[in-house]
Image (tube, rainbow, N blue to C red; front, side, top):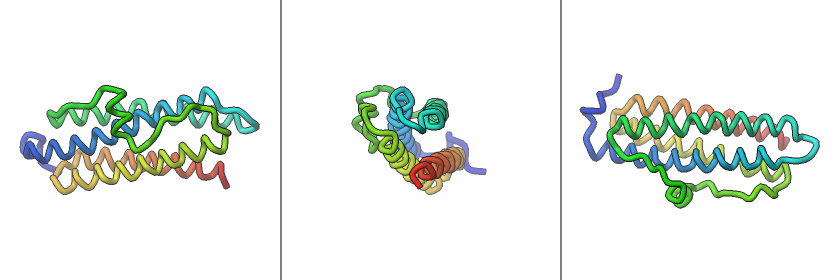
Length: 156
């Protein structure tokens, strides 16, 4: 088991929190992206995509809270402003006027970005002996890779 938060240096906690804030920002943008597409998807695949997009945004909404609460457990500040999240995020907002295949590709790219971001969180957590954050990042990475696989399957 890793060391308690109280034994992780302030600079290490701040580095971990910075990586987590990146994950929160991207998760928040991906949440809204999936919800926007859930509302606006059209076409022959409406039913399954509507359901998949809802599953994604519901998962991501809970994940945002888990990630932000981990930041607070590290006694650091969790970014809570949408403007800050949008500025920080490597995932961009979309207007919802895309075709179903474009929506799938955009969400696929977002899931792959989230997986990469979680890998970064895992790395900085591991380097600093924070196994609880490391475990959270690994689990979230698995979730995003699974969503990426599901989305990729729609494009095959």
